Amino acid sequence: MRVSARAQRIQPFYVMEMAKTAGAIAREAAGSDHPMVYMNVGEPDFTAPPLVQEAAERAIREGRTQYTQSMGLPELRERISAWYAQRFGVQVPARRIIVTAGASAALHLACLALIDAGDEILMPDPSYPCNRQFVSMAEGRAVMIPSTAAERFQLSAAKVAEAWGAHTRGVMLASPSNPTGTSIHPDELARIQAVVTERGGITLIDEIYLGLSFDDAYSHSALALDDDIISINSFSKYFNMTGWRLGWLVVPDALVPVIEQIAQHLFICASSVSQYAALACFEPASLAEYERRRAEFKARRDWFVPQLNALGLTVPVTPDGAFYAWADCSAACDKLFAGRSEYNSEMQTPGSWEFAFELMKRAHLAVTPGRDFGHADTARYIRFSTANSMAQLHTAIERLRAVLA
Image (cartoon, rainbow, N blue to C red; front, top):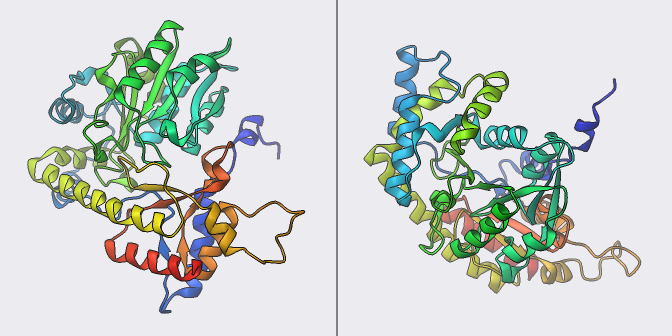
């Protein structure tokens, strides 16, 4: 059977491939004293709070399971709008908010609406792997720009200006970012937006971890800068509703009918049950619980990152949000693979890919190698997800210490 050229361009999602291997090893370790500790998938270990679960059950009992408007429930769009005002001090009219089947659908819709064949989108290297695949599916091309620890692994206005070419359509950013957990400083973001605006381009920004910001200096939505910025958000991370597949998109007024029409054809609407459940996310009791959980994620970061640094798994930039640690494993690889006959001077030096598999086999610890996240220097890095209990984080450090001793 002939497969489309579009499908052939899509690269593997190594995070999920690693998860398969981790699952297989975990089955072998089941019932042992060392069950697998998963630090590879970016999914909160918390589930939706009680009020959200009750709202979903109520929607099912009351038969509110039919299609909604493609734009989403009007009352949910209003509550998201109110949340922006209350949490970030920014006015985002509900008419510009489009509820989607997860942030992935939001990104897909934005790319289909804005990218033509041959258009180039600038994004930092490293960045979330699916973002460049969404660009590819829209017949565009992601241009990965290496970013350094000194730049917080984010783009700068100077690099955007330098990389902008005849086919550049715009930039795709993430703040806080997966895999690094770092954000763009609002001043630098304003400079990037000025460069993009001057060239008539578009700015798409993934803000799905924005609710999990830990530093007031970075806890600002890009929507405060310019109504032309397109923001993608989600109920998955801060709101702990990953499998509910619910997100949203904030777009300029002129783009609303365009996105609505595409959404009608592709998705009809997001899950009605998930939407009715999400209304309860904004109840005071739910918001208080989300803030308690945000404090727990911060406490985990504050304990775990110094432990990694002490083991030589250096985290060059302390994450200011999300639940990731982007660690340089070069020194750890030198120690772990020293004297191994399969690695000699004629072969490539083992990096995070080999390191990740070694940890799964020897420590029953699943992590994510940097291969997924870019091209420039990512083979040196490993991503740890700290969306685990403190007990599991302590276990992970003990196992790492044993392996690297």
